Length: 153
Image 1: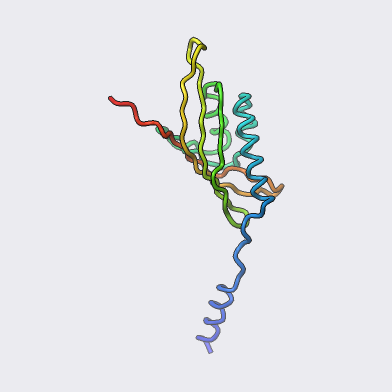
Image 2 (image 1 turned 45 degrees about the horizontal axis):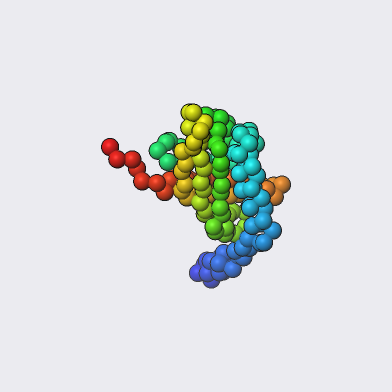
C-alpha cells in the first residue's frame, strides 16, 4: 500500500502544469520597460531608471562589485556620467509564468571633458525579469559587459 501511495504522490507532482510560456502581451510589457529605461537614462532620470528594478535587484557591472538593492542601484546611476547617446536592443526575450530573461546589446557615448567629442562603448547584457503584482516586468538581476578589448598595459 505504501509504494502505491508514494507512486501516486510522484505521479501527481509530475502532472502539475508547468507555468505558461510568455504571451505576446508579456513580451510587449518587457519591451515597454526596456524602452522606458532607455528614455530615463537618456534624460538622466536616475530615480525613474532605478524604479524599473525590483527592491532587492542586483546589477553586476563589468570591473566592479555587485550593486545590490534599489537604493544602491540608484546611487550607481547617480554616480555615472551623463551620456551623449544610449541605445539598448533586446535580441531574445523568453520565460515562463512570472519569470523571464532578456538578452541583448547596448551602446553609449560619454562626452569628453572638452565636450567636443565622445568616448563610446558597446557590449551585451543579460537580465532576469520578474512580473510584479501590477503586471509590470521589473529587472531582478542584470549583468553587462563591454565588447571592447581590455586596454593593453
